[in-house]
Length: 79
Image (cartoon, rainbow, N blue to C red; front, top):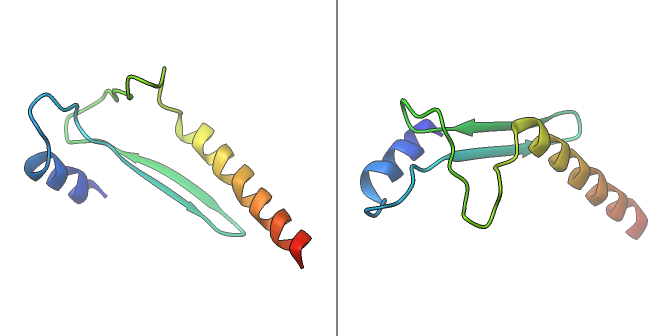
């Protein structure tokens, strides 16, 4: 992921853009994972002007698990 963030930063950003971030969301039956990737030497994340803050990894993990459970419930309900 770090490689993609660096590539985007070098090749695709426009003047005035905030540094990019990468977010990996993965889920399966036994585990969910949330990870952030920032450009090298960056310690701050600037969220979109439409959001007050960027959710923490734990908050994203909880939302990912909630959505996964909802999908499983809908799948069982339709069978």
